[in-house]
Length: 268
Image (cartoon, rainbow, N blue to C red; front, side, top):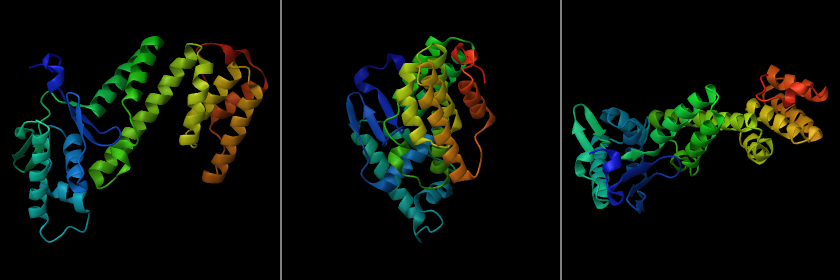
């Protein structure tokens, strides 16, 4: 059965872009036992692929596993199957298959996969100059996030690497989204979001550059120059570096009131 053919009340959805949650239809549940939560997170990250007991033990206990770690893992797998069963998710979703375990996704949705598809399609639309479409796709992708990945917990290498990679993808999505807004002349709309982004990621120079441009186009030249000075101070204090060439180029262009700053799109 295709995913689109499943009745809404039977649709299964796993959410990792925020607190880990499992939804079936309109019912949503979270796992209270942290070790079981870690187990489900790893299996979802590696959905449809086998995860070995050794990998799972590393995620659950790091480099200090208990003496009966394998037995403990079996208990947590059993608890996870019971949890999924209470949500009316088939027991075969978690399979034991040599040399470990796998989560069979079947028709279930996993939110980070949806996000990555939207980012891919939005990136392609932006490259091809379809900014309205890109903006819609990227906004939809960002709307899937409901807080820090997995509620902020980070354990072994699989989860830690996943969090690092997905946060990088989120940053790219936001940067592309703002670029599309600026190319569409929606600079005033972008200002509030960009102030939040430079506060959230003060070392990400692209957000400072975008904010300077959005402010300048909103007839706020002095504020744009203050953003540059603040970015310069942060980079100097934190890294001992000067701003990148792109950021310096925008500052010079603002000082000179270059007409290129008002052209859409802007290339720096």
